[in-house]
Amino acid sequence: MLNYFLKGEKGTRLRFMGMLLSAILVLLSVFTLTQKGLNFGLDFTGGYLTEFTTSQSVELKELQSFIAKNHNGEFELTAQGNIHFQLREAPSASTTANSLDWQSAVTQNDDINAQVLSSAYIGSQVGDELFDQGCLAMFSAMIAVMIYLAVRFEWRLAVGSVVALVHDLILVLGLFSLLQIEFNLTVLASLLAIIGYSLNDSIIVGDRVRELLRVQSNNILSPATIINNAIKSTLTRTLITSGTTLATVASVWLLAGAPLQGFAIALFTGIVVGTFSSICIAATLPELLGLSAKNYEVKVDAHTQTLLDMP
Image (cartoon, rainbow, N blue to C red; front, side, top):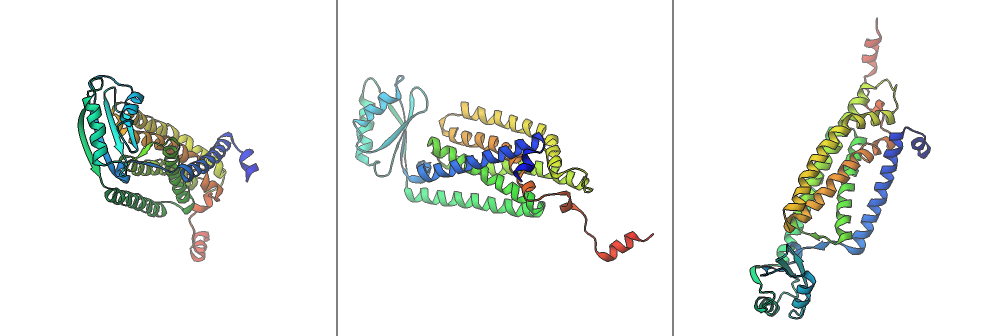
């Protein structure tokens, strides 16, 4: 099988190399997830979230050091701009005394002169319920996708699309684990969007492969050549669709602010790897599983064949 790909057309070799690269990235992502896990946000862990502004621009490190002197527990401070900050406290650290101490310190300091905009508490039980419901929604979407693919495609193309879909989700989660980007409800929502987008890309390529296999039922062209032709005929539309979507997501990433950054990063990554997997996995794996034009030949019984052979 390896010699078959190495001696094949250039497009076939590139698809095979891309699938090997995808396999390596999936293994690295799984390793990262098992070692570092995900950095769950307050939506899932619970705790206090406080937003405040300062009267003048303050360096994040300086402000963090100042708050640490007046805070006894663990906290995470993020900058939403030059004068806009968010402080997250874990449930164990988010006591009333801690909150009052550091808030009084930053509001009474003349150099900082902060003003608290909002302070909200999210219970851990609510976070657990949100996580369970989100995972249930993603699992339900995956089941619906598998049923749809089983009805629409021959099983080899269906398996290729499902594997490509799982590949996309694992790589996005691996990136969030590696960079320890906060994983919250908006990121979970982006995973559901990635499922739909990745499926759409795989279906476009799979439909074209199926059409060409039916046309080439006389086996003049090899399955590898047919798949390469299918990818070439859909590549322009795929790149244009992905490019315009990426431009929109990039605008959200750069201009919508910190609350939607995680959502935009996940969706941007999902679109890139989804376009890649629709070519290197959804189209290549069925070939490895033995997809050919024979799978789409119309089968007739012996009686019908006898009638067709009669002069």
